[in-house]
Image 1 (cartoon, rainbow, N blue to C red):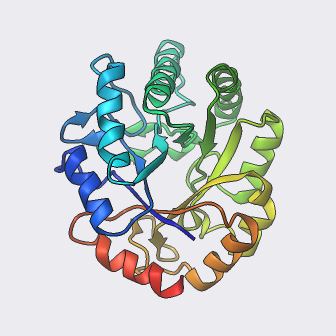
Image 2 (image 1 turned 45 degrees about the horizontal axis):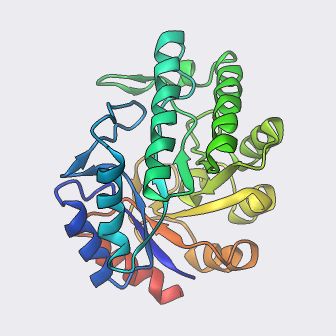
Length: 273
């Protein structure tokens, strides 16, 4: 299996520096987050003004990686698709549309996201609001709008489930994908995100036909905070074996690392590969 790196966690680097780090590490690809020092446009669960990202600037960023033989198969969006304020939700969907335009200008065909959460500043996720009955219809409506955009612009959108979100288990995510029933809406599996609710076998049994991207991080059982691969309870022997069985063409995209920790995470994964 190929190995890649999510660029979030490397905010102090420019795209040239990030690309050189990936090339020096012998990586095959990156999942691009627009959070580098010279492209600071990514806001988790929110949005930013992407107008400075002209087609020429998009090509410059993408070429920093491809000129070093580092592929860029996907880009991270992660805006809030269950925002209860209709005006704010419309702005989030427009931000996603703007990200699709950026992806097209960069030659990227896959955009990654979560369903979104209601986050209270200083307090974190409001689980009651995030999991409320009226949140799911908003998610479905938002996703169907995105599916239309994906058709128009020839991209795939992958949803990453997380145990404290509406898509909190492999089964819930499978039901959601079946509700949407669209070939351009797929799943990004991060086993650490579902570890509290599912075994690895259950994750692949439910999501196998839908998996279009893989993340590799870790989490201790009964702990909310995610950590780098090798520091938690994900059974990477089993995870990699199942990934090779169900989606061997996909790279493992490593996240939750930074310039000080990425080497140990890759050493851990390579010991299984």
